[in-house]
Length: 136
Image 1 (cartoon, rainbow, N blue to C red):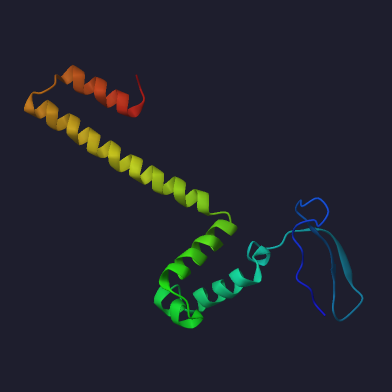
Image 2: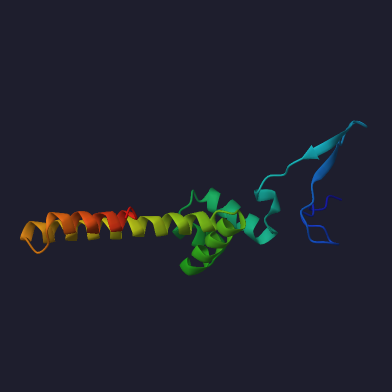
């Protein structure tokens, strides 16, 4: 009987490594440090979800039908898998950078429009632009 490989130590809860591989046909054994894939560490529920997601080519409506779950549940499970694979924080950082970039662009446009209307001097516009960039 095959058991799912534990990825956390049951004693100290630290990461476990694969150190021995054995052939199922002959007595060959290989010892060393081997890494497992990120997907292998997902719980069964997330693996089932990922299989359905891939089978449905990422079409959320099809995943809903396949698993008999609602759109918000599909999104939550997808977010959960993304987080479990270690990508959740990157996505939030990229989204934050995108918003910051858009806000910076709007502020620059506002400064240029104020300069064009004569509300501020060129020197004041330069100072404000430098403050936006963090170059005082």
